[in-house]
Amino acid sequence: MTDRPRMGSSATATMAAGNPPADAPHSGAPEAAQSGGEADPSGEPIRVLIADDHALFRRGLEMVLAEEEGIDLVGQASDGAEAVQVASETVPDIVLMDIRMPKTSGIEAARQMKESAPSAKIVMLTISDEEDDLFEAIRAGASGYLLKDIPLDEVADSVRAVHGGQSLINPSMAGKLLTEFATLARRDEEEPPAKHVAAPKLTDREMEVLRLVARGMNNRDIAKELFISENTVKNHVRNILEKLQIHSRMEAVMIAVREKLIEFS
Image 1 (cartoon, rainbow, N blue to C red):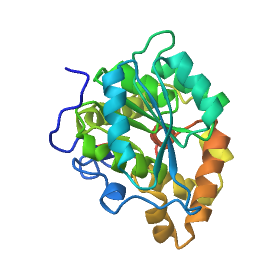
Image 2: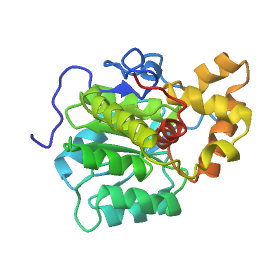
Image 3: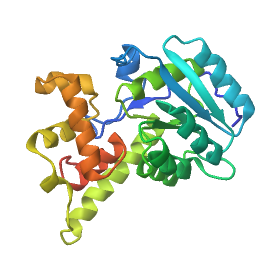
Image 4: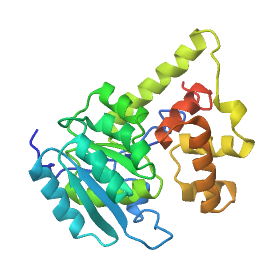
């Protein structure tokens, strides 16, 4: 694998984990990307930080994002420690970050950014297709996990999709993630009941929103499904993440599995 992404077929999928295989993540450009993503209601450009130890790869992303309207590149970093520092100084909306970097790994940097730049949504852009890296990235709060063979012209769409509330993952990794969810569900059935924190803390409406998040729906679709505004959905999602002390919608899916809101056949 070279540092430069290959121009190939679409490499992203919307995160959807409900009732596989019917609701399994699909290949192709994410739904939000196809429609241009959810617009920023403030009208402000999406602020992006690139963190990668390969200068050539950073330069490639810089050239692509520079051509996109509504996206501003606010900083770059060549290692995880620098990424945390730059994120705290620039407060990006989206961080495109490699996993394996000097000084501090992308996963550890993601954990630290939740303290120094909590509003930033992190997308791992990496050559690693290891399951452990995927699961640790989700636990660290990543909202996306994309392999570097994603076509360059899809990067901007992925940025818009994640900024609009989507969780993105490569189709090749989505199957591994669903397998892990199924394993979690089976393990909960076999083990003695554990203390669950989700159900008692969430309101009925928040539980409804969580079920729809677990199905891979974005804020706009959830709003239509529940006949409420997008802002109300965003407030519910924010409350869910705060109450469960988690950082991303994909972590919310894990909670949904643990609380048996998703059934696996």
